[in-house]
Image (cartoon, rainbow, N blue to C red; front, side, top):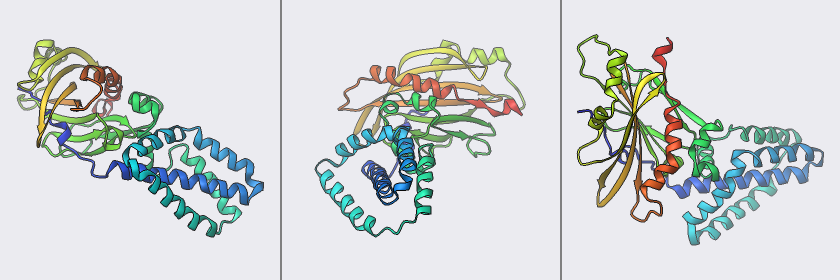
Length: 323
């Protein structure tokens, strides 16, 4: 009855090519380093401040990301990488010698670099750098745990059916509106190019007008037998269990399904968290496909990313409870 949409990968496509995201972030980092070197050589009296700004950025999550950025950029550009680096070097050779930089401007830039180390940098650059962070790429839950997150609130969203809740996901995940009627928002890991697709949905329960479920009735919705009704026909059940979200009865269910897009057929592992607020069901759904040339089978992907799913579900806040 309450089948959930599993075509999550089709809901939101990030249209910016990955090579472009990576090359912009790489250029940003290289130019920043060059400017710091210029300040260090041009203003010896700012040597201490320059080293402090340099260290602040390089020791931050963004500095950690640079190595991953270089590795992934090499994979994306392949034989074009030397040409890209040469072009970037040529642009800097033309630009930097002509820089008219005062001591006040240099000091202001050092303060900006320090602020960047705390996340105050262009959103596209921040997302891309975090998306190649070696530890976060392996375990996105660490990105959340270390405070790099974005919070989405459904208040006044036309598809939320009056339900006000919020969820936090890693800051490196892209975000977009869902195309289908019940899908509020779609997130995708690695700035829109990763294996995890997270979908927020709300559906209205067929209850008499004004009727509110009791806590006992809500618990009944999440018993193993009842949870099976959430699985689309033709899917393979993996596991289902009753859990608690925001102190309210909830369920977690996992299944495999096959989805076809154009001429590609994929098997997807879906992990769904669901709870009830008033007369609506809130769904937080994660889908990870097994690509045809994938090195990791679905069981391994699930083991690696389940902590991220659970950490994200644990950020759910039903704001109506606190009014």
